[in-house]
Length: 87
Length: 453
Image 1 (cartoon, rainbow over the protein chains, first blue to last red):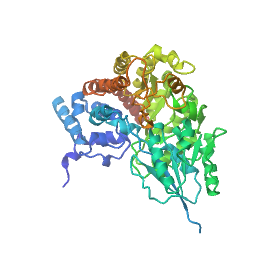
Image 2 (cartoon, chains in turn purple, orange; image 1 turned 45 degrees about the horizontal axis):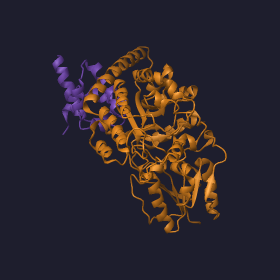
Image 3 (tube, rainbow over the protein chains, first blue to last red; image 1 turned 45 degrees about the vertical axis):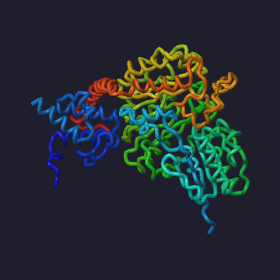
Image 4 (tube, chains in turn cyan, red; image 1 turned 90 degrees about the vertical axis):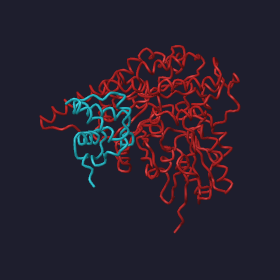
């Protein structure tokens, strides 16, 4: 069964940005990926990813929220909540 | 057809982050410190160099004892061992077992260079110097039944003509970062530094073409490798560094390196570092005390540069390159207050990471000569305690236990949730401004029909 949430925003934006910054393929980025286990992503790379996502989505993720993120799916959830709150 | 000879290349087990159980507990339990192994665990580069110098007709098996156990029954015609001082005790145990079977053992690497006569009592042959200058002769003598007890280098190797290390030997094993060497040596002669005093006292460089070919070779064998340039001092020749960084940009790697602070004054190098994927630079600050830095290196360079540390750290990090500060505590002018002063410096300057080690009197260093003369070396601390995180001598103004505990207190002050949140906020603001500039540039290029590399 296809997980339809993976085909929607903000997942697509996050997937594209992770792939672009980490220089990996978008297909390798899935919701279940732990953010610390992503290829080429350490804490500093993650900050570049977060900064790009924030700029594109027009949101700001605070540090407490950032620390609670374990997977790409968590990252997507936080961004979804913040974009909904902004709207 | 003659049977292929078998060479075992062995890196003995080592203890990362010291033997003190409190250090190990911190390493296990601190969420913020988890990347320590990721950043600094690499393969034994010396063995891959030996592999590249071994002629066809030899089967080679590279064994990293941190990853897999040594099979002492494995067929072998010759064993090559390498190791830092902390690996020496284990190196001798491994040598004993193979020699008991009649398999000759050759040792090289840092500890063999620092204490060749001691090492020679445990192995058949010791190599003192760079592998490129010695290993071909070792192999020649072995195949002609004439292995000598000691080989000493008489002229420095020309790194611009050395073969590429046999990275493929380590390919099948998991390493978080792949070590690539672009140069050897360091212009600073620090009193406690073992590497530059005995191993290579003059700088030597590979050509930029060589380095690029090596990085490409590594990229062909590892998926998205994180490259750790293992040079003692990556940014000595600025022109060469600029050329190398420019050539690294299109390769799209992520990397870290080691240097002193001097490059912070060069905005072009800083921009190129960020563009080429530099994540962190490990910088040997050593101390934040004027008194301690006075006389730490022969030219007193670090003492003269202490007043620039704050500006240097800020400038480098503002360019998107994290500063990983290295400090050596327990020198004779250090007191119990030195730990708090170090913790304050690393936190006030929001360093990306820290390495806080106990000053260690390695064999062959002027520091050890002084301490032996003063009877301050702790006799119950075998080489396996020379991890740089264990205190192996009697410090002047504290006990060895206080030194270890004090060094750990700096880690605790730095790697914790509260400070990590503050540090993340700091770095996020840097990255937001860098990303803004980058996105504006990308848009400008896109509208002009060009693209960024």
